[in-house]
Amino acid sequence: MTYVLIALPLIAIIASVFFAIRAVKKGKKAKTAFKSQVIAFAAVAVLTFAIPMVASATTAAEEAATPATTAAAAEGETTAADTQDKNFQNGMGLLAAGFVTAISGIGGGIAVAAAAPAAIGATSEDPKVFGKALIFVALGEGIALYGLLISILILNKVV
Image (spheres, rainbow, N blue to C red):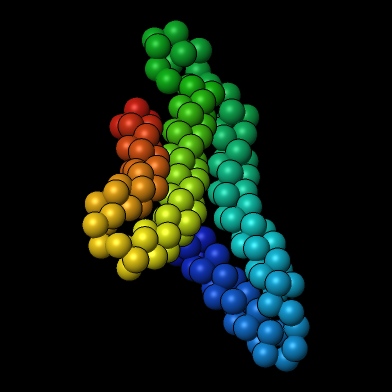
């Protein structure tokens, strides 16, 4: 089942890229194809997270429906509700770490995409400004590294 959950999003993304390229070759505007590509990616991302969460919720509901012994609860053993709460916290922590890494990577990419061509142009005009220009490119990369650091801190807290 795990392999299916991994393979289906990959197949869906590859298929949507194939269909977008084919649509552009047949005369569809590239901007429209890009928008449909983003929508398809968002749908696959939502389904990739939603299917396991629904399966987990139904499993936890089934475990909660079974009667727990009062002696086990009195002895301090973990109940299904405690396990479900801990699993939910771990899952949200993993999602947060993923989002932090993704958003900081996108932000770093945007910063480098703006700074690097300007640095190359400035260096081609005057080679003495290479060090100053390199600092601005490195600042953009720092955004992604800070996001990666925060996600590592979140993962150490979760796991």
